[in-house]
Image (tube, rainbow, N blue to C red; front, side, top):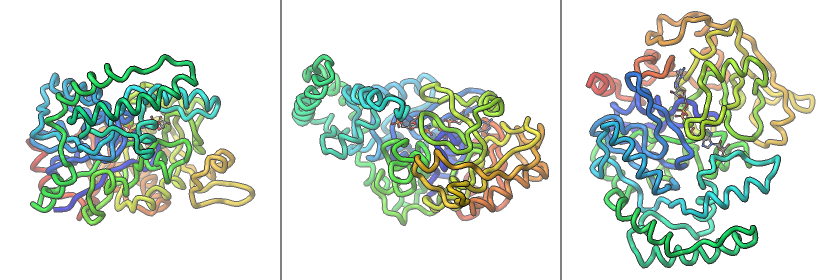
Length: 443
Ligand code: GDP
Ligand code: IMO
Ligand code: MG
C-alpha cells in the first residue's frame, strides 16, 4: 500500500498536525523524521486542542503505530512529559504503539546554554530560535560528540560520553564566565531517564522495513517547513535539520522508493516566527488582522508569528525541492474578512523580475514583490466541507495558486476541526486510500 510524506512548504506552522491527524486513519503507522520539541503540531478533536511536539500527530488514533526516527534530537524530559500529558488525556501511549530510534540524538543540559550564548553573540542578527537546544544538539551530532538514545541504556558508555562532553563544554563555559558543569549528577539524571525510556528505544529503521515488507502503509510526518531547511531554506535563518523530503530517508533509514507520494502543506497566506527575510510580510493593520483571526501565536513558544500575503515564488520553489505531488491548502477562512487579497507572483530585484526563489537573505531582503490582486471571499469558506459550496472568488484564488506553484490542491482545510475540510474530488487519487480513510473516520 502507498506511503505518503506530509511536510511544510513555507516557514513552518502550515497545519501539518491537523492534516496528519486527518489522514492517519488511512495508514498503519505515522513516522516523524527530523526536528525535535521545537515543533508544535496542533490537533483539534471535538473542541479539545492538543499540541504535539515530538510524538507523531497520529497518536490520537487508537492502534496506529507512532515512530520517532534517528533524524530527531530528543529531550528526554520533553519526551516523557509528552507521554504523560497524553496519558492524562486518556490517550493510550505505550511501547506497543510508540517507538524511538536508538540512533536519535539526545539533547543534553549544555545544549540550551550554548544556544543562548550563540544567539546573544549574533546581536541584531540573532536567528530567533526556540531555545530548546536543537541547533547545538545537531552541531554535536555532526561533530561526532553526540549522545544517542541507545547510549542511555549502557551505563558505562553513557558515563564516558558525558564525562568527555562535560570536559569539552566546560572550556567554553569558562570562557563565557559560566559555572562549570558537573558530570556525575548529569550521568545519574540521564541514566534514570534512560530506564524510563528503555521500553520505547528500538531499531526504528528495521521496524519500518518489516511493516512495509508486510504490506502496511506509513505516513511520514515532517516538522518545520522547507524554507527552514538547513540546506534549502533561507540560511542562516533556518533550523538545523533537513525538513525537506530527502530528510525522511536519512531521518528514518528508509530508501527513497518507500515514499510513494508527497503532500505539501501550504497556508493560504504566509507566516514566519523568529528572524530572517520575509518578502511578503505585512507590517501594518492587515498583518495584525491576519494574526488575530488566524490565532498566529507559536504552538511551542507562544511568540507572535509574523504574517503576510501568499508568496507563490517561494511555494513554487518548495514544491520543486520536495517533488510535491499535491498541496493541502490551510486556513483560507482566516482571509475571509478581506475584500481583496494579494498574491506575490515574482520579485523585483535590480531591475529584473525574479521568478525563481533566491534563498539568500541578502537578496530576499532587497526584493520588492510583484502583486496580483484578487477579490476576497467574504464569510463563505469557514467550516466548509463540500467542494461544490465554495464561492467562485475563492476557487479563482485556488486556481491562481495552483498555476503559479505548478501543483494541484487536493485538500482545503477550512477550520481547525477534522470535519472542517474539503477533499477536492479526485485530488488524492493514488496517494491516499480513501475507502480506508472513510472507514477509519467513522470509528
Ligand atoms: P503545524 O506546526 O504545521 O502543525 O501547525 P501549527 O499547529 O503550529 O499551527 C497551525 C494552526 O492553525 C493551529 O492552531 C491549527 O489548529 C490551526 N489550523 C489548521 N488548519 C486550519 C484552518 O484551516 N483554519 C484555521 N482557522 N485554523 C487552522
Ligand atoms: P513546526 O513543526 C515554525 C524556527 C524558529 C527559528 C528557527 C530556528 O511547528 O512547523 P530552532 O529552535 O529550530 O533552532 O529555531 O526555526 N522554527 C519554527 N518555526 N514552526 C516550527 O515548527 C519551527 N521550528 C523551528 O522560530 O526561526
Ligand atoms: Mg507548529
